[in-house]
Length: 410
Image (tube, rainbow, N blue to C red; front, side, top):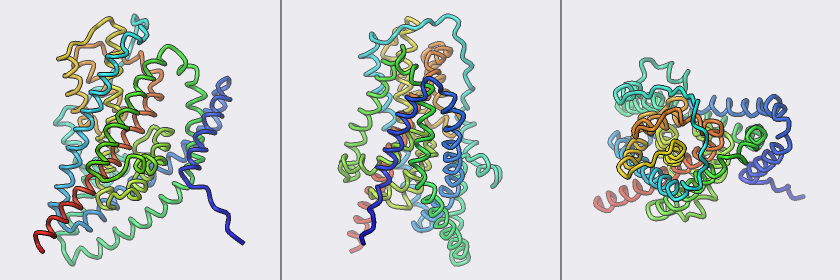
């Protein structure tokens, strides 16, 4: 007797998302039911994901560094990764500004008197640099400060390589711990369809009426830019530099994208993103380095959001931004994507920095704060898709580099 064929995980996640949207629409009249009785199970699922993310990042980066056996190679990969992230972020903010300018006459002009918004203080460049380096080994893990976890794992990886034979036993333990973490991750990922359902239902139940309200056109412009950036920038770069067809790329990324969309968490989508990227051809050691770094500093979707919201807020205050001011937005948003890395509520802090850079009132953020979760779902999906594109491209570039070296040696 033949075994019943199991439904593929991407299909299960899509079904969970679709059912969650339907359930959310059903609960729009009584959103408190979805919030009080369905959302907690989504929170449990996200907690499980966050519980395994730090061990996955720590052990997988160490395993990746050990397998490279060369500290210079890690530096080469790091430079390529950061350059790709900064370039695509700049492209993203340009796309956001172009389309916001095209549609700005269709934006609603909302009441701006009596607005209040307390902007969190953005860290200085030096504070950001200092904050990258942990002061003790426990704190980064307890607070899930991903940049510090990455730095700690790099130091341990380098230490194992430099220790030679004496570091081998510790290296073997790290690789064993990485394998165990991966198995735990696989078990948690199998729960994704249920998690997605429980996360999306309360969002739709609470925000359904708001989506149909006055900010609908602003949301539509943002989502148009999200889709355009993914289709144009990621399709062209993965095809030309990574050798992967756009159709194969987006089909392979579907599970991670659905997780990012429903959870609005780059870190929450990280385990699935690692799995999807490796299936699409990203090397395990490179994916282990570029994806956690991207989940922290790569914010293409957030950059689009900055551009659209800056133009919208300016129009509400009756201000027309000049070309130099819009160029300032491009520069500020690109640098802020790294400057606010790992800071809670980074999207809002970045928007406050962008508004301040061109003299717009920060309290204008209150105009979009009510539907920020809807913006966040799309921008997180774009962010993690860009991370995966980078992992695939850097893997291909390193592969070509190794082939050239081997050719010269031969």
